[in-house]
Image (cartoon, rainbow over all chains, first blue to last red; front, side):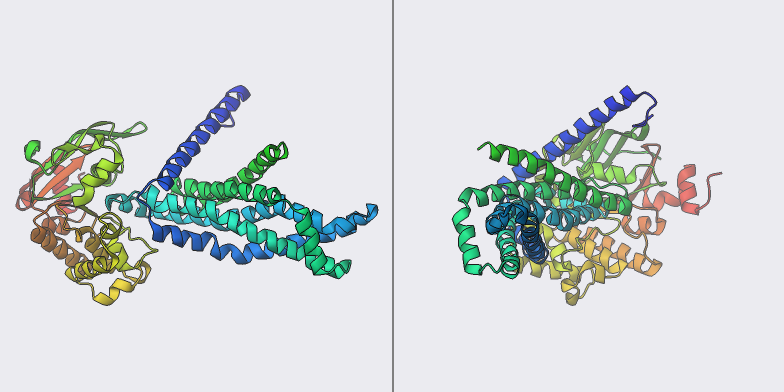
Amino acid sequence: MGLFSTNPVAALGRATLEGIAAIGRVGLFAARGISAALSPPWYPRQILAQFASVGFLSLPVVGLTAWFTGAALALNIYSGGDRFNAETVLPQIVALGITRELGPVLAALMLAGRVASAMASEIGAMRATEQVDAMVTLSTDPRRYLIAPRLIAATLSLPLLTLITDIIGVAGGMQVSNYLIDLSPSIYITNTMDFLTAWDVESGLIKSAVFGFIIGLMGCFHGDNAKGGARGVGRATTSAMVSAAVLILASDYLLTSVFALK
Amino acid sequence: MTQTPMTTNAKIAWMGITKRFGAQVVLDGLDLAVAPGRSLALLGRSGQGKSVTLKLALGLMKPDAGQVLLDGVDVTRQSEAERRASFRGIGMLFQGGALFDSLPVWENVAFRLINADGIGRREARERAVEALALVKLAPDVADRYPSELSGGMQKRAGLARAIVGTPSLLFFDEPTTGLDPITAGAINELIRDRVTSLGCTAVSITHDMASARTIADELAMLDNGRIVWRGRADELDDADHPLVRAFVTGKSME
């Protein structure tokens, strides 16, 4: 008997219970991680190392993603928008699309692939080789030494990366506009700045902080629960990346719904 | 011969410990006590719960029933913070070394000093290099990473990490597994030397009879979740328990 039980009602019930139990485990893990992140002792060297790993080392991939996205968005608006003379508002649409939606979401998805998977594999390998147990015997709480620095770094790094994504994304759109419709960079920037409100940027940054926490949480949770040696670590890595991506997209919809009503 | 010292004066004691994994009963009312300053080797066939016994003492698992008394205090009922404080005087050498591969050797050895005891990095490094010298590792090893060390050197570094805080209780999980006889002999001598010098209590898990004879004053045989024989190291050859005989002779019980 398992998920593929011959009784569909029983299978549905079992799957529902397992889903609720999984939500409970993640919730408990998150609560303990937040508690460890907000109370001493902190390990500043670990936090700084995670900032470097999550934030600084992600700059190239996030920057490239931002430029290509801004440029592609500008191309789409130009080619699709000329049907109703919308190319004149190209800078505004690029800015809105990047700051409110594409900047935070794409930066988060790139980090889900790069960071959540790395966290899961590192912590999973430490579990498999008894390094986490060793830490406990050395009177050090793995939640404070391993989990809290990753949650802090992911939650605070992603808004900074998103801010950079916003700037580079707008720059990508600007370069394409300059080439396609001969719109000068100064006019492009003026149009963008006149149009954008602080909330356009702020809402994206709030989203990205939530996405950053999700990335850290999924990376640490799946790594900490990795079982079964190398295969288990591989499975944890995949699960961390996939679950982070799905949760980012789901929470993006929820947050956008809340912000849209504001 | 089965004898259990009085648990009231024991450094560490497992009292009536039961541990199950699903339907499988691994420890079935285990009673075992080790007096202060004594070194005990826990013997047993694979899968008999030797590692589980250590993990229960280290708070890495919880028993289904029973108590683990460390200096008379039941660690199974302590909060995580209380247990971490209790474990300040415990050193553990893991089977695979369990060195942190992201840290250089000296930071591995000094991990507790820096992160739990709040000692400055400069002083912690000096003490780590001293501890490395005690296990016959040269100072230049301090800046290397665990992946750059041989298996024997990793065991030595793990031993240095275990003894650096001058512990009163040491645990060794298969200290010579995977090592050649010469390196294993050197590790055994180091363990014996450190345990004697520190005057601490030691509990070792091993399948290696040569190792057990060298590092332990007493031996205990774990089978079917209980201690079925216990005696001094010099009584081993005269033991009449069939499982102990099989371990000594290296022959099957059938």
